[in-house]
Image 1 (cartoon, rainbow, N blue to C red):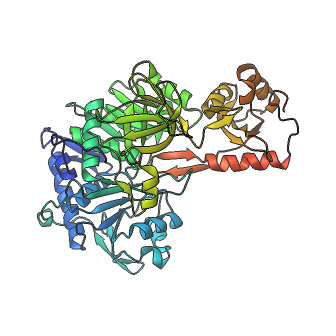
Image 2: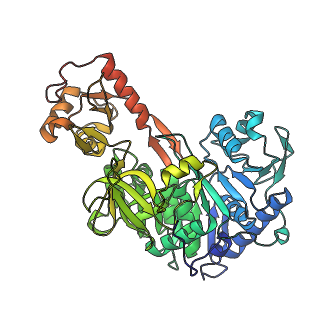
Image 3: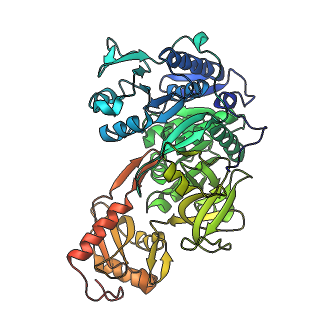
Amino acid sequence: MRKTYGPDYPRTLDALMAWSDRPAASPAVSDEAGTLSRRAFHERVLSAASGLRRVGVIPGARVALWLPNSAAYLAAIFACARLGALAVHINTRFRVSEVGSLLRRSRAVARVTQWGFAPVDFPAIFAALPTEDRAALHSVMALEQPGAVSELAGLPVLPLFGVAADAGPDEGTATAACLTFTTSGTTSGPKLVLHDQQTIAGHAVDVARRVGLDAPDAALLAAIPLCGTFGNAAAMAAIAGGAHVVCLSQFDGDAAAALIRRHRITHVFGGDDMFGRIACAARGQRFESVRFSGVAAFHSSAAESIAAADAIGLHPHGLYGSSEVQALFSMAEGENRLFAGGAPVSAQARLDVRDPQTGASLPPGASGELWIDAPSRFVEYLENPTATERAIDADGMFRTGDLARLDGTGFIFEARIGDAMRLGGFLVSPEEIEAVIQKQPDVAGVQVVAAACGDGDPVPVAFVKPADGAAFDEAVLLARCRERLARFKIPQRIVVVEAFPIANGPNGPKVQRVRLREMAEAILNEAPIRNRSPARSK
């Protein structure tokens, strides 16, 4: 059975909004339209609840939210929770097939979206959906009534915001389905991860306390999409602490840097690429207001981006999380500050590292599969009991699929199990090889995967993205690897690519390692190398 938060925690999102004792007139949320006070934001939530109730959203109904970051998006999340409805988050990067699949699988009855968002023509994409994908929908809600538009693809278009006085009572409960996150789908088919209200609210309080978002002057830069667990967990923690949430609808390094200085931002969370772009935009000028930042490493060049962020005062800390246990599940401190992992934010969290083959628990320091039980853990994969049963054991532990090792205070994340490579009889993280190649001149990025040639054992293959204008010499890079790596870790081939295949997930872009493995196997099997000794291969 899953652990739950105690009675001293907020049990619903409505209770979370009132959790902080910050004054009602203090800033709550800012976006391009301006700043809402805590009192004004609460009125905005009631207004959104009124609009949703008007179109028949009742407890248990499902509402699709397809929006860029804004105060209105946050208000819609809390409005759904107040009605006891399930918010189905849709990534703004998704297009016809992905949006259609989510609407069909979730059976959302209403969709909330925005007209006039330059990067994405939401109405056009929606109009192109097959009829069967939107069969359950009966209305489209707009943040602002788009002129004379009254219908879209045969459905009425109505304003989201109504009269706050018509919001009705709070019908949210601790165990009511609250929201779903979509898994990235980079290693398997995407699933809908379901959380209830107490899980989201309780985790928000733990995070706020851990990183200081409950400080009187705390302010969060909400630059990561709210549709994913990364951006959502950060924003919920800020609301729990009464911090000022500053929304950025479309990430831009210069815009992010300007907002940090203008609003005296104290907390920033994001991927390594985001931090690198902020550091570049800073042009060497330090950010004096930032007290804590959390970074997730998604690229092989992460070390350089994180070092650049550290140099200008962003104080990055390594993070760990997932849609299933929520982002910001744990944070690294001390000498391991830049490693992914760390100590869980919840004192109730239980960790176990097990042998992937036998399932036996392993001692601290030994690498194995990370299993987690914590009150932030998801309830289920929406309407997918088979996947849920595979992911959670009888003791309530969630199988993360991540390679990790326990240390004195928590754990250190090493790799996805699917990314880890069995080479020469040893389990090897691709980052060990990537780190060596990444340090070589003119290498802008590198990804290493294991691939089989014929019926032989898997061998490592490296894909390298050269720096602009740089020459590429496979023999030289292989020679460097031979100097610094064990024989079984030396890549069989080093292949130049212009770009890595990317999956744009709700928490940031991720490299599709499955696609790289397919490419590597095609290369190896097109021209098999008879002598498979890495020391002599070219």
